[in-house]
Length: 370
Image (tube, rainbow, N blue to C red):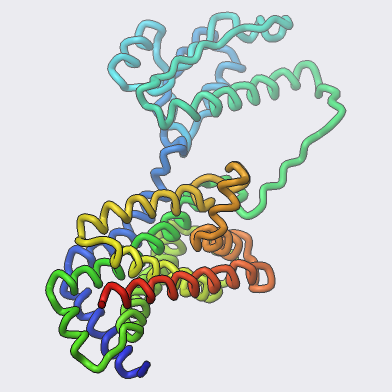
C-alpha cells in the first residue's frame, strides 16, 4: 500500500464531492440550519406559548399568578373576559387559558381549596403535553409564597436544596445543538462514503481504477480519509461558529479532544458506509438501507433517550455500535468537561469497533470488486 496512491485517490474524491452541489448543500445545511433549529425548536421544549388569563378575583394573589408567566416559556399573558375565552380558544389564538374564579383569595385565606380552571388546546401537542405541568408548578409556587406571608413558613422535616450542574438554566437547546452535531457526523459520514462508491460504479469509473496499479485497500482508505476529513472539518467549524458563536452554548471541555474522538467515530462510520454501499445495488437501495441502519443508531445510542431508560438487552446490544460510545464521549467532554483519563474507555471502544468494521468492509469491498 503506497501513501502517494492513497493521497491522490483521496484528492480525486474531494474533487468529485466539490462537483456535487446537492451533497455540498446537505453538508452545509446539516451543520448550520439543522443545528440551529434543533437547538431553538426542540419539540418537547415550551417556547413562547400563547396564554390568556381570566381574572375574576382581581386580588393580590391573582395578580401574582398573572405576572408569573413570562418569556421565554410563555408570551406576556393577555387578560381577557370570560366571554372571550371560548372564542379565542376556538380561533386558535391561545394555547392555554386560565380562569381564576371570584373570591379566590378569600377562600385561600379561609383554608378552603378553591379551583382554578385551566383550558388547553390539545391540537398543539408539543406544547400541550408539557405546558400543563409548567403552569401547575408556577401557580402552586405563587400560591404557596402568598400563603406563607400570612401563615408563616410551614414546618417540613426535609428541605431540598437543588444544585443543577453542567446546565444551570436547564436549557434544552444546549442538548439539542450538540445532539444534532452528533447525528450529522454519523449520517453524513455514511452517506458521503457510500455515495462516492456507488457513484463510481454507476459512472463506470470503478473499472478504470481496477486497471491502474492500485489495490482495493488503497481505494477504500482514500475514500475513508477524504470523506472523513470533510465531515471532521465541517463539525469543527459548526461547533465554533454555530454552537459557541450563534447559540452561545458554553463548551466545558477540550474541543481538540472531542475532535480526536470524532476522528475515531468517522473511521468507524465511513467504513460502515463502504460496507453498506457494497451491499446495496444502486443509490435508491442504499437510501433504503441507510434508513434501516441510521434510525436504530440515532434512537438507541443514548443521544435521544438516556441508555439507562432502555431495557438491559438493548443496552448490551448497542454497545457494539460506535454511536453509543461516541455519544458518551461527546457528552462527557462537551458538557461535563471530562478529560482523556475519564473518556479513554470510549476512545478504546471506538478504535476497536472501527477496526472491526474496517476489516469487514475491506473484505466485502474486495469481493465486490471481484
